Length: 232
Image 1 (cartoon, rainbow, N blue to C red):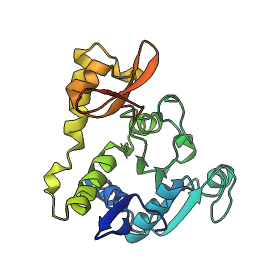
Image 2: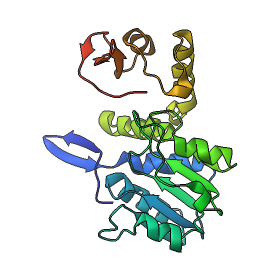
Image 3: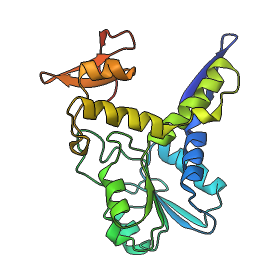
């Protein structure tokens, strides 16, 4: 793959692994997306794009192109993708475009790709990126990155503790519903991508960043304030 996201210390020796591969594969199976014989566009040129490339090849795609702004290396540009590959069947976004705080942005206009049957976005903050919302409005099977995030964490836990973890733990909907309920209880509008406040973070039990009086803070599992970690 050429990218590592998990490092395990075994008897003083470090080993690198990539649980994003299994996370994305699990998301694809969860969605029921078919890649065999399909044309796929992977947006981005970073480590996650390399993982996505390996995953879609394993799932039997016919053609796959990585897309970047400059089209360097083995990538094509966004203009080239639009002109020459408007018949793409699946788009996978591995760029941060659309992530908080720029939640109103999307890396491509889906109307330029009328044959799309699936859209996957690695962005998990907000829960639904503009790209995913646009896809769902057009009746395209689509999912954001939360499921992939939860799945890869389960596989990473297996590596860390060196034992199998019940795959039923891969329940992104439970995490998503917990977030939504807590936001609702605290009068936070999920559609506007509002941040969780410190009290809500503690209730949720996750180490997340939030905005308190305009200042970014973080909250650990013990409720203590920490440096910025992530937003939901």
